[in-house]
Amino acid sequence: MTLIKSISGIRGTIGGKSGDALTPMDIVKFTAAYGRWVMETTGLRKIVIGRDARISGQMVNNLVTGTLMGLGIDVIDLGLSTTPTVEIAVPDEQAGGGIIITASHNPKQWNALKLLNYKGEFINDNDGKKVLELAEDTAWEFAEVDKLGKVTYDDTYLQKHIDKILALPLVDVAAIKAADFKVVIDCVNSTGGLFLPPLLEALGVKYVDQLYCIPNGDFPHNPEPLPENLTAISARVLETGADLGIVVDPDVDRLCFVNQDGSMFGEEYTLVAVADHVLRNTPGNTVSNLSSTRALRDVTEHLGGVYEASAVGEVNVVTRMKEVNAIIGGEGNGGIIYPELHYGRDALVGIALFLTHLAKYGKDILQLRNGYPQYYISKNKITLTEGMDIDNLLKQVEVKYQQQLYSTIDGLKIEFGKQWVHLRRSNTEPVIRIYSEGATVEEADLLAQQLIDDINKLLN
Image (cartoon, rainbow, N blue to C red):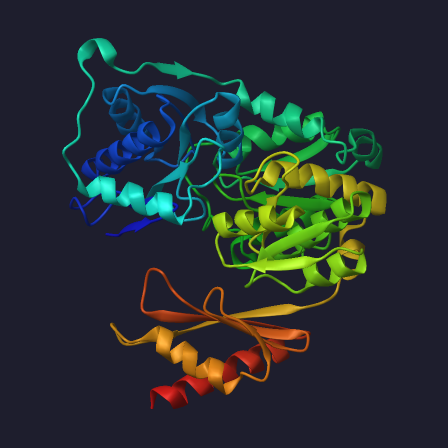
């Protein structure tokens, strides 16, 4: 059993002992702390909640709702929803914050409370630490019977979210409709099955083959949208002669595509393609995290913009985007952040922008993919002894490569021309994660092995 407390929320496996997993006691404890933080920082007594379709969702939802009502907080419950939809609803409802009940790409035994501020954005490091502090202070005061919060159920935000996407200047419904795309979708039996079909219909896509679109939480495969988990949609795209496949994770904030030959477009290139479309029409700057592909930098600079890197984590990407006034950003895991709509990863707006780009490019997704700079990322890790001084170890590696361009805003990233390697400590286990990128798989692997060898020599 696992319980992980971080700045962005609380996640864990369902069942087990309190404090060791995400049990009812833990759900109430952290919900109460968050509710108290919202009231203390905003003075507002209204919070928006929504959940993905995982099996434990209703149970967690009931506990969250009851706890917030017990604090005297009104709840706007969107029911089965998506992470970006809740993010949009928070400012629209003038709420003090939002809770998304989802463990994102984690398997079905996991669930989580993702915490938003009054802007509908993930809470930052300082605010997250304050919530965790409040969770340890159990001297809470709950509302008397006449001051209990009320719950309002609102199922209108699916359409509101779609309407906001359709209103964006860079979403061209006429072009998408004229392209007459034939699409297969995989929604891993979560809330994407409720949102993608009406979105695609609104965009003028007539042929949509639905794979795993029943929102019952019975994930038919590992829900993380990685190539090894997407064999079914790959086969279905080939079988149906579709133009492309579209895949989202359980809470619909990550997006990836399948080419017409069944190969993967590559979730690293989801952001690259969408940014290409945005930058061609509204020149500006871009941001992604240090572990994302260099291809975004190449495309940005080619189109006259400036690329900036942030520490890993959506809240860090958003912070950097605001600092440099970026018009598009995100993460290499298929996360698109388009500030014209809102500051959060949003697969739905990503789909609309991508299909517009593809329709105007010429409908051939494989040709589009092959037109971008070709890079390959290798992902590795080194397991260390518990309690080892990882920061000192990374400092020694930094000294060894001090003649190279490097960054220490999140671990250590070293550049070797257009190749790079990023070393960062895990927040959940005693390991150093090693991501590297090169023009070929072999180059990326070789660079990773070089750094692994360096670390092993230092350890010995």
